[in-house]
Length: 331
Length: 307
Image 1: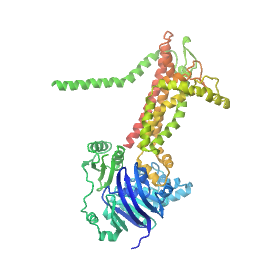
Image 2: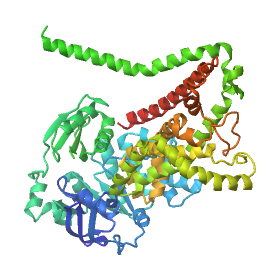
Image 3: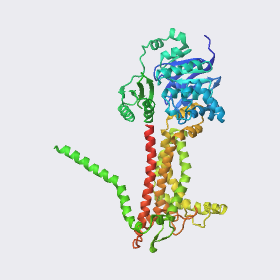
Image 4: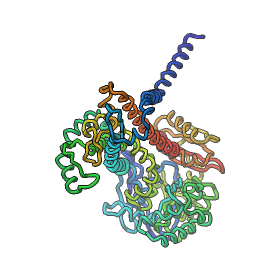
């Protein structure tokens, strides 16, 4: 199968402080296909994704060299207009993040900042993209209601509509379904399959099955390196590298294991914050705490609170209909 | 009972009592002030005391209106100057500048908060009084000869001088509270907005301030309460002239705290004088307490919501 290249990464190196997070990454990402990036936690998948729209610039002490060519233009060129670049690239996060405004304003936010002022135009945009993300029927009667009142699954679809509303060419997804319930996750996956006709989609995922269901092209990351990449069918049928084989067959030992487990089922706010905080403070720096919660608000609020405390949230994952897993590193 | 356990229990009780005592001081003060202010309230109505201009203690006239007006003048001037400076500084510190710059600037700002008011007063006399006398006052009252600029006070000791000095004194309070509030806005919100192609300023204007404004209001209220109660620096530069109702920002102002500090204990032979000053003190205490309660309630409400 022949692929047309949309984004071309050449010798990309990235350091956090003194630590190298990406090692000489070179890869061509195909146009109007779903590319899945897989690999164990902390292997640089998300970092790589954020380096594609330069959101990585927001971290302190990041150093990047190498080239990322989007439509033939190097985005790390100092003359690049960063707001234009980001307008070309929509991003979905692991935890959906509604902006503190109404559902309507969330979708209209992007077009507004890029200069669409007329109410009529905005009405059309909001309707079109809410329909495209499959949320319209659920929210059409409460467009002016606060977006934060939506369920997590709905919020993620809202985020998708918001990203689409800036009319990007590329959609990046950083494990966009891992915090969702199975039905919402399927909703989002369906959208991706429809959207790939018009957009280049790059998806970081933890789920091999999801990669198999969605991807046309697969990249396997390990410890900041690309171990293997190729068309999905071939990649899964016939992986060449031993590490890839191990990962695909589920025999892979995760690079990072939790040093402590904390079960917060049946605990609500703010008791769960206090317990999580104390547990983290009981650990040594760099150690990892795995928390299980079954209280939906905690899924977004607990990681936020712990980040505010200065810790690093590595992962939020839905385990079952009622339970979520939150993995946090003590810093 | 074991002697160790007894000591432990004893210590606990003692500390509880001490804690209770500390907590009660404010209430005791308010109560004491009220008791001392009562005699004058029995003779004159609160309305007369608050709104009458005539302050002639020897004739038994204790109108506090011009002192209240003086307090309001300096406070309003101070806040109008301080808010733009401090809020934008806070935004710069939390949103734009590098972590290293922030970590250097913040201690300096906190240092500003720790300087003794009398030093601000001296600085006001040396720097701000001449500035007002030689430049601001002649310029404004000639070019804009109407309210609130016209004045015949050429000394430089005026409401605006007090306001300017006060503004510098409330900078650190507003900056540090506002900066902290802005930084509690989740990082992801910035990421979302910037990832959509917004500039930093658009992100701040449309999302961050939307989340942070109640906290910024709280910061301003806390600054306001500091400005309201500040005594020494204002006393030194605001003019403190009796029988002048400040109609202009260049007129001398005599705020309540200055009145209390200046006259308490001096004219105690005048009947009810003591009581009138106590009333002024009570007024100040109540207003500042209300400001503080409002400010901290907003901050606590935000804190609960964020956690």
